[in-house]
Image (cartoon, rainbow, N blue to C red; front, side, top):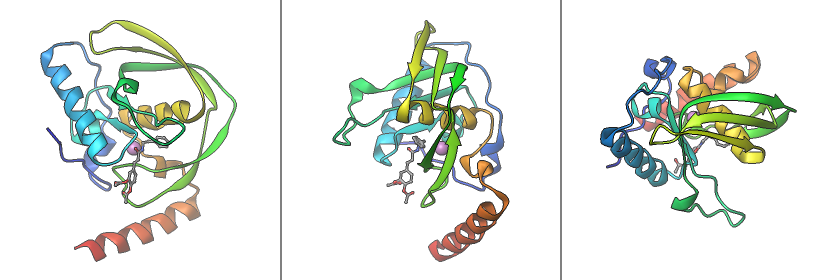
Length: 171
Ligand code: Y12
Ligand code: CO
């Protein structure tokens, strides 16, 4: 099922999401719905709060070198914790909850992630490149943070003006 994606400035996006404690069929169904929702919107990452569910779950599907996404490359990440963040990198980010806006954001270049999979099993992965950036973007959602909050004062002001204008034109 495709779920509605909530968009800025919806205040629900500011929620700090809660730990997942039950790894049951309901969670599995929800993760499947998140995948369908993300793919139907051409996304590569989605956090549960973006579909109005404040749990610490996110999914990622990083495209291959040709830009294609494959279901077998889906990463389902529950209760993530980042460790050993190193280096810095600038990348132009976008977000399904901030449609039509892309800006350079600074992130760590590499990190180690501890998380649970859909069965509650403990997993570890080493991330770099786009995966590391996407993980940081999605974990920010679990903390109620959007990438636009990392912009400088002037860039944020410009964003608010352009976004408001785009919202008006959509109506
Ligand atoms: C690097 C940086 C950020 C991330 C987080 C995941 N972001 C996305 O998946 C963004 C997807 C996105 C897709 C759009 O296209 C459509 O909606 C059809 C889009 O375009 C518009 O909203 C007009 C914007 C963002 C991962 C890695
Ligand atoms: Co996002």
